[in-house]
Image 1 (tube, rainbow, N blue to C red):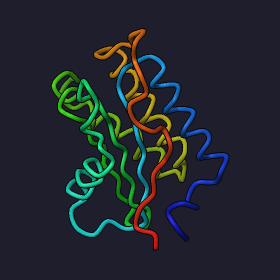
Image 2: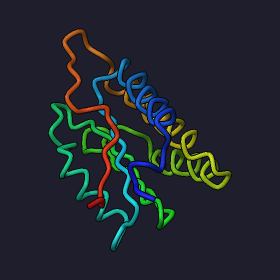
Image 3: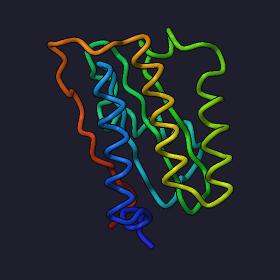
Length: 147
């Protein structure tokens, strides 16, 4: 299996739709990156992908990356400094808990979309949509580790 085939085309559409819906109400940016393996520390790898995807390049530093390593059964959520300065303590843990519950049931699409919606609610609260907002980063799912 390849990371790019973990989700079906229909599931990918649902995830992208959740990202688009969450971003309609905020200036924040959300991305999902999927790989088969994470070699090393999950948070370090997620931070490297965050940087590679230029998530730190949003005007208000309010990007959120959902990173999944499928074969390793690990995931991480990374928010940029702008959002981390505003969300309540333990917020990312609440999202991780909800996603873990759904992942344990094999509901990966639902876990990702619920996590995206939860992040979107916080982004909406702290970074509401402005009439001059532009979509600074792609909403497409990115994949890594494939040759």
